[in-house]
Amino acid sequence: MPMRAKVASSVSRTAAALSRAAGRGDGSVIGGWIGLKIDPDLLAHLSAGRAIALVSGTNGKTTTTRLTTAAVGVLGRVASNAFGANMPTGHTSALAKAGSTPYAVLEVDEHYLAQVLEATEPHVVALLNLSRDQLDRAKEVAMMAQLWRAALVRHPRVRVVANADDPMVVWAATPPGDPAQGHVPPHVTWFSAGQRWHDDSWVCPECGSTIQRSGGQWWCTGCPLRRPEPQWTVEDDGVLDPTGAWHKIQLQLPGTVNLGNAATALAVAAEFGVRPVDAVSRLGTVTSVAGRYAQVDRDGRNIRLLLAKNPASWLEAFDMADVAPTLLSINARDPDGLDTSWLFDVDFSPLAGRQVLITGDRAYDLAVRLDVNGVPFRHVRTFDEAVRAVPPGRLEVIANYTAFQDIRAELDRVN
Image (tube, rainbow, N blue to C red):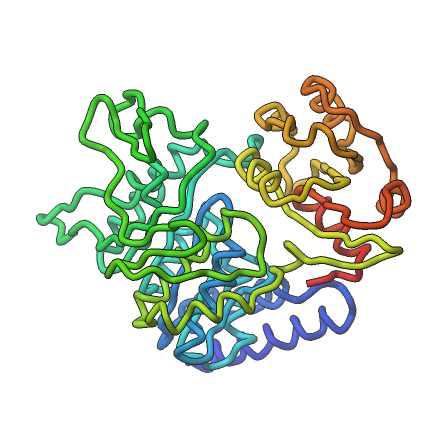
């Protein structure tokens, strides 16, 4: 690297280490922020010489990145932003901290995908899903799909692993080529993990006609856009690969959605030459992801943490949670988005019949929503009060981003 980049990288590592030592955080942002101030091209310099995978989407990025890192680890050391700092500052900090590695797997906020594509020149990009998120500041779903599509046009050599079940992702992953400009459509490998949330993809992004669905298939009623045939498919408790071989997946992570994340991880690793048979056992070593799915025993209660930040992820969280006392926590701080109207897009009826507690800065917003849904609840002001309010045994905790981090801090920042 140029001398300026070497200095910036060294300062980045030092700043991150000082942040961790001072208990101010894990250093996954501040190190990159300072490094990029010294050398604005530091991310590009740190990316050079590495085979890189980017993982982006509205939901599941952090878990899929962790599973992919485990799978690619068959080949050697892998750098990754394991704590979910998914903007260029986080990528820069992660690569600086890792030092020289042949591979990197980076989670990327969907808004920053085009910028990070430009800086890192990755080998492969995984596109998971697109749904509404942070309504007060995030782009409308079709606009995000358009940004992805335009970015891929500018990088025709990148290989794409994309979700065949999401019409928005399919449209974004298949931009038309323009031979006159030297552009060709990207090489796309499709995976299918099922998609239960459909409320952001009823209208075709190409022509505006209705999307129809039946038996796992979907198609536009007004143009040729339709579900492509996937090469990787979740089947029962395993994954079918492109050869037709079935691989049993034994995860320590809950929920059918994580089988889909595992299928994505195997598909991305295969783009680096990793055989599924060599990678599947590594997927089972992932037990929690930056606190997600972590289990902590306290005062006779087994507390499990689940992160849910938008309607689609709350739907999956209810699928993961056991039928047990459940604490719901909602904040509306800047990282969460200030608008809580999305709560009315979530069906809370799966919680009927269990003990439900609510807390957080916007607990009263949640209270109104639960009352409309006919779900009884009790308001608690602190996490400790919630623990005392339930009998010994399992306590499921489902929280949005800053509420999740508050509770994780109560549990000594469990990872």
